[in-house]
Amino acid sequence: MSGFLGMISVGALWQIAYAPYVSDYSRYMPAGSGARPAFWASYWGCVLGSVLPMLLGALLGLTVSDGNIVAGLAAATQPISILIVVVFSIGIGSTTAMNVYCGVLSSITVGQTFLPSWRAGAAARIVLSVIFVVLALAMALLGAKNFMVNYENFLSLLLCVMAPWTAVNLVDFYLVQHGKYDVQSFFAADGGVYGRYNTTALFCYGLGIAVQVPFLATDLYTGPVARAFGGVDVSWLVALVVVGPLYYFLAMAKR
Image 1 (cartoon, rainbow, N blue to C red):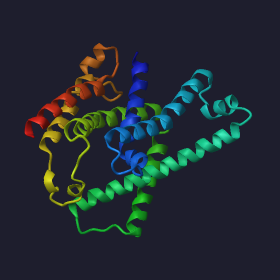
Image 2 (image 1 turned 135 degrees about the vertical axis):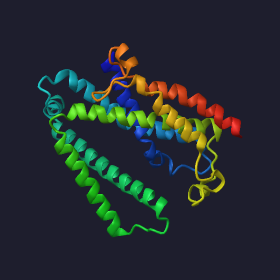
Image 3 (image 1 turned 180 degrees about the vertical axis):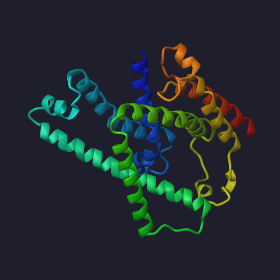
Image 4 (image 1 turned 90 degrees about the horizontal axis):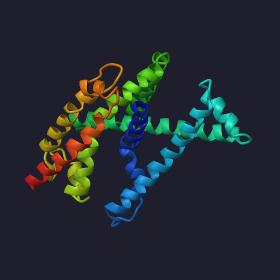
């Protein structure tokens, strides 16, 4: 049960973490498409690009006994194994480049929050890209001996902070605002019609992280409820169940 729910958590985290890429699947749709077509375009774009490779990985995990996944993939996909490995290698390379790109843009956005007059030119973008690549490489090399443990801890931490965020994000978009936003206010220094802070969202987000603590099951910390469940981590489900309805109630009360 622990492993099964752990894999569900990984799949859920993958979709949640891909939220910044949603616009890549829907940006070229007609302006009046609405929330429903945008949802399905994003959903199928994310799911088809992730669930199918995950299913392949699960099948390989059942057939590869020595842990060498690449060799197992090559053996299982004869006679087109070379083509399959090349396709996966290109996919990993392009995904990594896209992640560096998004990390750099996010860093620039954070920097401009505190220094509005700063305009990151080509040199700044190149330097930030190199820093991201070096940091990622250092983390990969230093954590290679305990990769799975470090990776699982990282996923648990990431899911802990992203589950309440996605609950607020989805409830606000679909149930509170119904997909209608004043986009220009997003770029205004004072927040435009929304102001600088959404105190309701921040409160629900902080509470969502706090309520997960007893349910966490990681190598670094295991909460009392998780221990009672035999090490099964359901913290992110608790965050969704608590934060979603709470944010909807509080946000609608302010309207």
